[in-house]
Length: 412
Image (cartoon, rainbow, N blue to C red; front, top):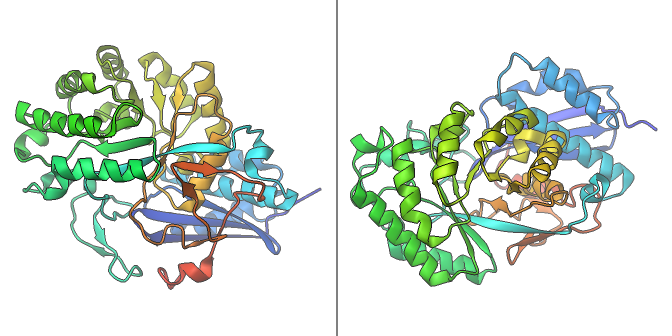
């Protein structure tokens, strides 16, 4: 039995983040995947196509090794397209076999808990693959609003009402009312006491910290203790600041604090990560900028208790290895996800394998067309859960006709 690859296509679309869709064809049958945001993915289409044509999709381990070996000199960006390609091949195989991906992988969990990434009082604005803020305009041609990456949003010189305590509390209540049992907020936000000089060296004043604590206390008081609450710091702060902030947050029993210092971006400072993990009463979560089983293996001595890999960057094969490693060391697996419904469903299917699953991320709550661009036309996340069913493959497909309403040049 063979399933020869006959075509390969890539298309990058601007939504709240950049979504890069991948299609792998075997004659009239195809599988769809998604690669995590990175510059230049569409430009790799022809090279990847050369590597894939004629390969037997069933020999997926060989294909992944071939792609990774061929892109050894290309840097981390290529990991994203390899991941999206492997997701698409798995979708192709399981459609051909008429079996859901999670069952093909051996998963036994058909309900996956989802946490809502709320950002602040409003959702995060749209950003491109360089993390530059963009305006979607007519949703077809995004316009760059600033040449400062969104990780530098604290270069804004004013505090907005969306960052008020009241705005945070309202958003938390709204999400709980929708059925979410876990919510994450960004704490690397402008405060009324914003001092750009301090922020640029990763420092916070006591007034800044007090304001952040006021937000978290108000949220916790409003939603109670049955809801998991997490915060993301986006690699913002220095070690001293993180330790002070961790101590101040301790009474509010957060599920985790995510990406506190730059040390977690590329595992550049294991000692720093270990100091944070040992001194902070709240579990630390990292992983969205890591790609391989080996990187997570190297992370184990740092005593990080929550791993957050992005399956649109690791792919199914490497993601499975990470899940199994987390299980061996009893480390929570709560995958990062800022993708479209395609990446979201790939993450959900793979998460079915995890016996240390916390919750997977959803980062498009305020995007009106998120459900519209796929078929069948049904709500993917319902009351904070994704229900996996008996539909083959990922269980959904990209609706290119519907997508043309937002990206008129889509050519998949």
